[in-house]
Length: 219
Image (tube, rainbow, N blue to C red):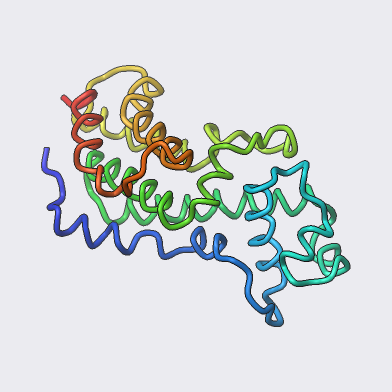
């Protein structure tokens, strides 16, 4: 199958992460009217990543966001409500990126490579966001929300794989197995990067990681 040229992918990889995920990972600045809710979520992301959900209090979030405790309760019911808004916002942002990938790339191979490129870029540009998505035990404080692996973005990633099977690009097999073969190594590299085990930027490894992953399932 044809894979998009390196030049096209390079441009795509540079632009794909300019979205709400990376905006949510920026450190708080002076709060402007109408931005209080976003500032609280940004501060919560930083604190939940550094301290953990249970070690972060509402006053902690207020100080980090440079707002009053009352402002937090004006926008959210409680700490869990802040965490839910953060989690759902990150999932929504990721889904938006997957929709862009689907619109920009015609084949399953190009779409799946675009997903891998997006995840690697997100790890470099918004580590707190990726850390929260992969490491936080969401079911402990958001029991009503689906776990990350069952979330809409990960369902979409599996749909890309399923579509590849339907088009003859990917060998027929269990979709979960194929998706794990394709993305599992990349996600393991992401956790190694977050842990400091891998010191080089992940986009520099994209070509090799993609080649190994794609060969494991391609027809």
